[in-house]
Length: 311
Ligand code: GDP
Image 1 (tube, rainbow, N blue to C red):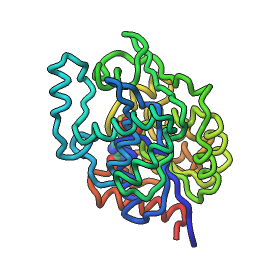
Image 2 (image 1 turned 120 degrees about the vertical axis):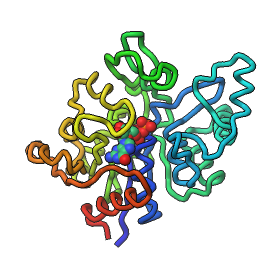
Image 3 (image 1 turned 30 degrees about the horizontal axis):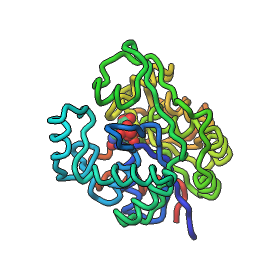
């Protein structure tokens, strides 16, 4: 039987389950977050999309969690000498992706057409990677030091300011990508990657049509918790969740997604939460959710496919 699988993805946590899936089947699509896309030194940078592309191409720098493995930094050093801003680091090979994308945008191509072209032609990736919208949406972090772009908060300010709120600028006006809608409708399995719920998945859900389609398909949607106990496995998820009044725990995440998921994978250490999660109508599956290597990525992906009756 042929199963259509779709993953809703951000960057560093998401790519782990994506690589795991890729080791089980080549046949799945990705709907990608675009809320962290931004302009930097006249380049249009798409961190989450590029993490998916580089991860699937097997060239992601896993140590850093971004960029291309063994990249050099001549461009960055030259920009430093020129007195340009260099708080967001771009390697030389990575730079080529940004230059091509920016050039194609200035020639009038849509982001989705560009991502398709780059993934297929530069990196030989067969999976569809669909940016959730072709309209620019910006995740903004409201802090005690002001309202700032997510990259300014996370990279430039090293997540130091106190987070008061998070919002998605322009998402009320943006049109979602109809390919994303079609693929959600026709999917047999929809996986919400172990991603930051507020900065990777919520920007996707901020497009109301996408959220409505997922609610329709709830029975087919499974999420993986990015949190163990009350701590995110990495990154600022806890700060964002707390600013949004959401408990930083598997239970809090299950509640946050409850309208659109029927299942959630939580860590063994959180098994005491499973009864409460079941009460909100989400069935929970306990396992080790840490993916520290290719074996663990594959194991978790296989488990998800088994739970979702993939054959
Ligand atoms: P970002 O765009 O780089 O923030 O990437 P994502 O949103 O895709 O991933 C960040 C989230 O992944 C964080 O909230 C982490 O807690 C989570 N994460 C990272 N590694 C793992 C892991 O091995 N297992 C699980 N379950 N979650 C992880």
